Image (cartoon, rainbow, N blue to C red; front, side, top):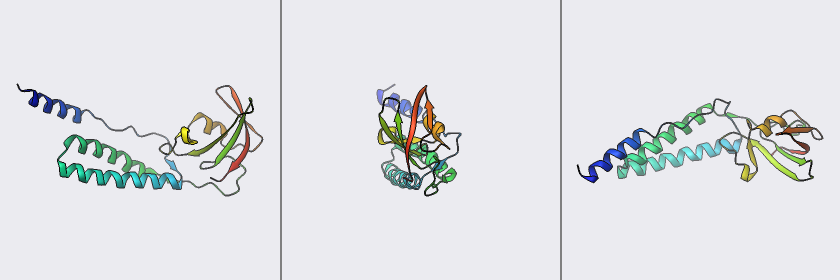
Length: 157
């Protein structure tokens, strides 16, 4: 058997074994920005699919198709949630400034799972920190992993 034929079989097995992207069992709450990001991802994937089909790149088509299924499902289940302006309780979509017991301040915006990026200051609404913050007001304490955080400021964005 030639090496080229073996590589083709390996490629076919790799395509068959890519599996689906797991979809969270939590409600798919999204901010307006999160919804726009989903729409942009879908548009980009459709463009990528067209290019892969023109090249007859079966592996790339399979990967893009899998991602399209994921993002289509996420778009269909998306629930836009906008915080009530001026709310004094921590809600989805809000920014929360916290002060730790060491005096260090951090700011988090609570967003949907697909939009969350802690390195950029956004956390998922199902994260331990967000769950500890929901329904609390400025001055209240949230405890996460045994550490206390005082809520010092809320913002609508």
